[in-house]
Length: 182
Image 1 (cartoon, helix red, strand yellow):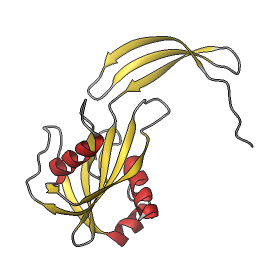
Image 2 (cartoon, helix red, strand yellow; image 1 turned 180 degrees about the vertical axis):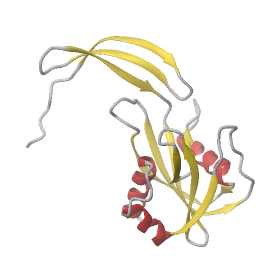
Image 3 (cartoon, helix red, strand yellow; image 1 turned 60 degrees about the vertical axis):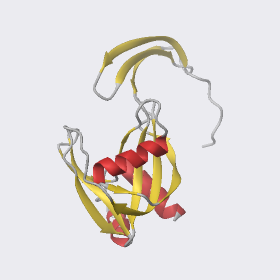
């Protein structure tokens, strides 16, 4: 099937919804170009996010293990979080790495970005790599965080990724970019 230019959906009306802890809800009434029908769509408005593939000086990737309320279980994922308003995403990545792991420094490179969840969200996640990070401080966790830092050798991290042990889609994408561009 070929990719062809499709008619755009038309926004007829936007209405703000409730503000939530991490998101603002917006309702968009959209006209379907295929059949002319109008549907109400729910959009979550959010700031962009970042994550980091942090490589230690001894060749390990730092992961964080934390409880994720949506699935009711712990995940192994890369350090990261939300970009504060007015903050550059590289600075946010450095801040999140320091806060969640206590590691800083290294040589930084941009891996790229993806839409966080284009089905119903309007934000992007920016992926970074930091080579040669070192422990310089204690963790600085928010009240709602309990984060365990886990250092995993490079090849073991690749194996865990390919075996599906790393579940967070933002971490999966960053690691794929890292191993592909490495």
